[in-house]
Image 1 (cartoon, rainbow, N blue to C red):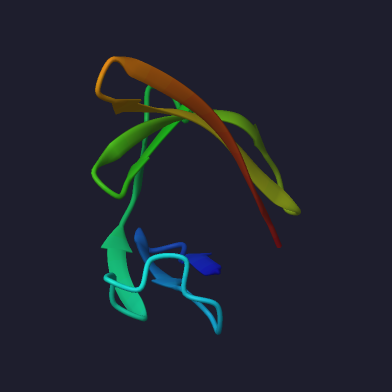
Image 2 (image 1 turned 90 degrees about the vertical axis):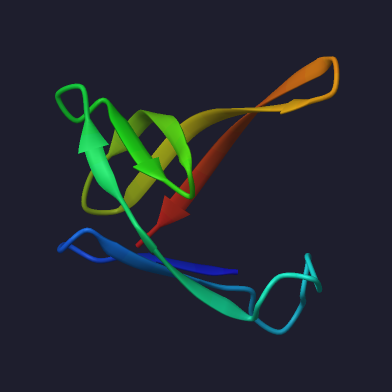
Amino acid sequence: DLVIFNANGSGSFNQGANHCYPEFPQSQSFAWEFHNNDTQIEYGGAMHTILALDENQLAIYTEESSGTATVGHILVYKH
């Protein structure tokens, strides 16, 4: 997958050659913005906690609820 965060608050997601979610479009645009003194980032309809952000990477923590279980994810995006 290729995820791009542009400086103007826009972004794009592309599934690449291996479609993890065939029912989703190949690519789609999204908007993003920082919150709470840049400790959180909102995109994809959810708020994510920023663990690290520098010129080389963005690492976030997010939670996903599925029925009775809540699963935490750490996502690391590299430049």
